[in-house]
Every structure is written in C-alpha cells, then in structure tokens.
Image (cartoon, rainbow, N blue to C red; front, side):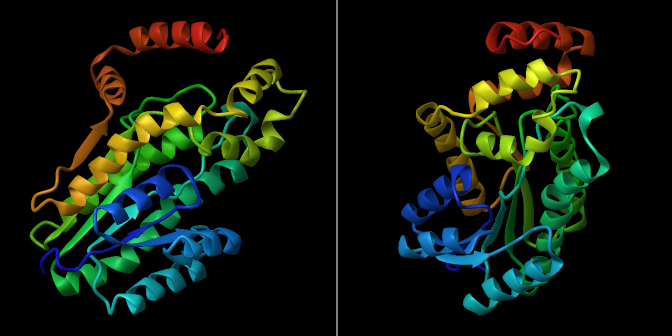
Length: 286
C-alpha cells in the first residue's frame, strides 16, 4: 500500500491537541476522521467540515461501532490511527479510590488498546499502517506528585506500544509514540472536573495544595499552549508520512530535557529539582 490512502483516524478531538492536530493534518492534505464523546462536539466538528464519529473508550460497544464506522466510510482502507484521547486525574494517591484509578486506566490504556486491536486486522489486510500513541515526556517512569494515575497510564502505554511494535515486525505496520511536554489546554480544566470529588475534600491532608491547583489550572494559558501544540502536531504528521517512522519523538526541547533527565539523573537529584520547581513555580512545598 502507498500513501495514496490519506485517511487518518484521530481520537479525542473536541479541543486541545486533538483538535489542533486534526486541523493541522487537514491543511497538509490528509482526510481526517475525528472522534469525540459528545454529540454536540461531533455536530460542531461536522459543521467545520470534519467527518466525526462518537467514541467512548470506556465502552466496548462504542469502540466496536466507531471502528466499524471508520472502516465502512473508508472502504476498509486506513492510513493511520492517532491515539490521542485520554483523561487525567488530579489527586494524591492516598485520596484516590480504586474506581478513580480504574477509570483512568479504562480510558487511557484498556480502551485505547482495544480500539487499536480492532483496527489492526484492516492494517494487516493492506500490509500497511501507521499507529501513533500520544504519550508524555514523563512516560519513562517518573511519577509527578498528585498526577500519579495519568503518569502510570502513559508508562503502561509505552510498554504496550513497544511490545506491539515488536509483534508487528515485518507487517508494514509501524508503531510510534509522541511524547509532548505538559500542554496548557482544556485538558487541565477537564482534569479538575474529573477529579472534583477528590480535590474538593476539606478533610484531605492535601486540602491546601488542592486549593492552589484550583487557582492554577482553572484558567490555562491558551496562547502559550499553541506554541507547544505545533511541534507535536508536526511530529505526528512526520510519522504518518514517513516510509520509516521513528519509534519515539519527544517534542519540544523542554520535553526532551525532561525525558532525558528522568532517564539519567539519580532519583534523589530528580526529587531535589522537582521539589524546588514546585515550590518556586506553584507555591507547593512538599
């Protein structure tokens, strides 16, 4: 198969990186099919000229319907899949319930992998495909305080992506991860909303810290986020168009610094730098 098939499925496109990437890829000439969880968002995207499907990664029935829908609309020919959809939780480990952890893993790991597995047979039939996972610069095992569930799911996706890449060797199907830095987009207010039952607790030992997070994350800096989104979308486009895609792209430079610092610095030194940064930048003293 060649790149003449320009259809790409991008998940999680209601806002933020997903929507930015969908716009970016369309301008580059790709046929972009997007997914969202809400019909109102789907209608808005359709009015902007996108082919939009509903997808709830917590539902196997929804995943099946979306996978069948995209293959029906493309006559079974799909160039690539960009797994962008996901949720983040804010909260100290001691304050999180089993259900909180389960929801994060259901969406970010189990649902994402189920969708990917449903599309692999189509990629196998055409002997070609580009699978992209959106990970994070801290996906190599670094656990940020209060962001443990999301960090853990990204680390899990890295391992699964590596495993899948090796299992699909010689099939013409590539598996890559893109690891961006923290993106100040709608993800942060959504994180507060998902975690409201945790961060609103006045009984928590971390109640004061949660109050600071409310002030910081309620109004993300959209303008600065755009500067970070562009290199990420560019990396995704590069993988989709490449004859030999890299396994991992870490962007931008700040993300590269984080990624390699996590990989090479001893843990005690990482702690010193982390706690200093949190105190200076967020006013949080651990």
